[in-house]
Image (cartoon, rainbow, N blue to C red; front, side):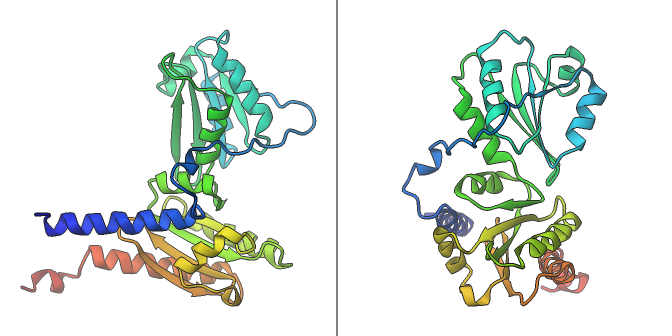
Length: 278
């Protein structure tokens, strides 16, 4: 017979799977494994920045919300050619390349590796290109697109996977109409608030005009007439809260987030009086 804790864990897992299926637009099983369409390539082919020492590498990582570096022990390898293909396809992410042994040692690189460095949760994700793995340019692109989380990450079925894999367990979603004349200012203020919760909350943007996103709105019992709205979600226990907004301001976003985090903290750390009660 299953123990009570096991039953609860199973229920939570089932609920989380349901939420995941909603976020992935109700795709049939396995569709999340399909490769996303490649980014458009415009203009001259982009090349990675050659990082010759540790100082240059550190500065390169610190200069962007998301930075991708190919660490290679030797350049005459098929994976290096594939890396250059990916660099040309993904225009909005800065790419670096290093073969310097001191740099590789500093970042604990023992085999050819593509690393993503994220500012939003101070996390590094590695894709090791060992001989036993058949990783082509398409798989490299997918790895990057899944994991390129930013201060404000726009939701789609690919970024959803990266969001769920993050160690940051609280996610804030802003549901808004991207065609609205207020959209640019809303996102600017939302991003300002995101800076205040770096490493604590992942900030996500959900475009209400995307048909599949209606499922996500439904999960939070939201209607288009209530937008823009905030929804916050804590992944381990599926606790959530919603706040319809007449206007997106840094203060309102901050208060909503702080209130949720404080409630979670009180539940995890009850007062001394509560601890002594039988």
